[in-house]
Image (cartoon, rainbow, N blue to C red; front, side, top):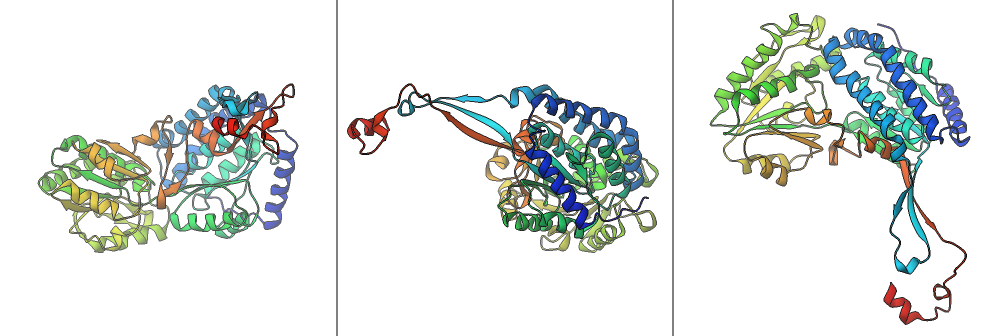
Length: 459
């Protein structure tokens, strides 16, 4: 793996200054130029697809198929949408003007916020860094990108791809650890887009508050997966096993813990074990489609959770290659560490319930999760009485695959959302414009407010 050197603070300031001058020059304002940059971005992703996927294999043991499905295809889909719709999104929007403002007209124009900072995590290091960049480009912002140091091969390829495609005055990559993150956050930005943990999200928001900088925070949390008594056991187990196996559970919207109706618990857990085997084989370490844990620290944290319950499936690990097999933990206490922290790995703690109201009470007593998954016939009730960033009924993960719906958190799982036009909006300011002609100048708005009784009726 390549070693990444921390970008120096002097270099960060140099790049920040260059991008500020570039934005102030107006170079990003022309819509045709933005569209051309999006087309260049698309060409770059296609050109660098193999190096990116090779790097994902090196850093995470992520197969080409999974890399394409969960990273490249989502990024390309976002770019294509913005290329197609940027003309429509950037047109002024006419709005009705009340009689009291006659003869004025009203509209809304979208203008770029300015210099953007995008900080991404390691678990989907291509998608979660570069998909927000699409919104920055289409809205007319400049962008400073900060990939994760935990996936050095991917981060290096991304740096090379960006340098090969764009001038650093416009889009640049910085590298390094949390010291570099801190130095970046010391600079003044017009928007910060951060994906990562709630604890780091707090630091980002604290830094942004100093300059009243707007933020989009895509965080995480413990996303519940609920299996009711009337769920289709086989289909539910298959979809849940897939959702937990994806990226070895290192997914911000992975089903984090199971809540299973006690009347179907034994049958469901047996089927869930079968479906893990159907997806990954008897020994998942032998398949190319099962990702490894990102580093030793994360592996050790996951291993510590095994003491929080009774292993009823899996539990096989190999620290030498950071392999951690799918594991089901029964007999888990709601107060145990595995139920307090986002797991971010292939461990499934199991809780049981009798009535759905118990589930609603449990979920709402905790922080709002990034996702909620329900299998059964009471989905509408669960959705009505709970809150989460996104949700699926009788499925997992798939809401992120539809770019026509928002992706984002709520409460402790984040703020703001993106994908499709919401990505454009995230990096834009919607500016109100009232245009008033000079051929008529209504006198009643001026002191000493003549005809006040008539004016009062119009207001």
